[in-house]
Length: 460
Image (cartoon, rainbow, N blue to C red; front, side):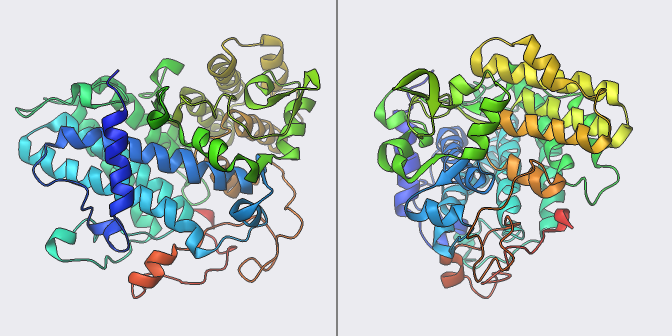
């Protein structure tokens, strides 16, 4: 694998030298004369830092996988999220990932590098989906045009963004499935799949299923569309869409970096901790830190050394296990097929266990993957979503999105969660726009002081 040093330096340059409206429409750290392929590593790394860092933490704090005990994380855990808190994830996604991906698309089309263009569209779709699931309406159609003098992009409605996501994925699949073109090959510059276009096509279909599922409350076709996409998606853990970090300090996973700099700001939440112990979940050994005073027990510290906080831990964008959970829900809720849902659920748990701990405890799988013995469809859905909640620990925003769609996991809102933007104290449904957008693009920001209980288009 190519050393990560060069592209991490590029990624950090993008963070340091981009600001304000430049986050969306101009990235001065991207040279104008480099090839599309040369930008690929930085764009992939930028997305991994954003989704594997701030997005994982806000999801974990809201979903009681993490508990905030100091600084910003304490406030966020209590549902007090300020506009400046969102500057980082917005900047990293737009400036360090989406803006470079838009540049890659333009350059790849000019170079006739179809596979590179297709890869960029797949990642662009996921980046847009992540932002839309946090903020709702976001800039896209009017974004990435700073070189043309447009520094104040308008916002696209979330529903339109979701249509764009599926369009980008379809276009990406078509380009990746076709001729490579006469331009430079994707190959070694692709630090996710090494230029394997079949792998990218599977990943794109898995993402199509994910984003179709998100619309289950507003679309009668969501489940059937998700199942159709899954038929062309992942078939094993080895195909997961993930970014792998290295062993050197400048190649480190963002959660590892957080544990080194601010690890004392959060701990493992008692709800998640208790759930793992109550179920005697085999993943407890990988997710929790061993208790130094009791070798057979665990503590709630959030430190490096667990599966997702090692220096070289991957950031997972989409996994085979998640795709099996999607199938389980879709078979149950869309087809009323408990047998097919149970089969998919057991496959999902098995895949998660094999990825996290190396082997699947079939007693655990059969006990926690059974659905037919449960008395109601609601109980069956709760079991699917609870197991998905465990399996997708530290996977971007998915647990929070699932909670907003289904009401599971059945968490109790934290005490002290009432504030001026969250008057009822319930788990927030959305986040505020970043302060940089309010300061520099106020005429286009849809709402500068949102009610955190305002529901998005897909959450009605």
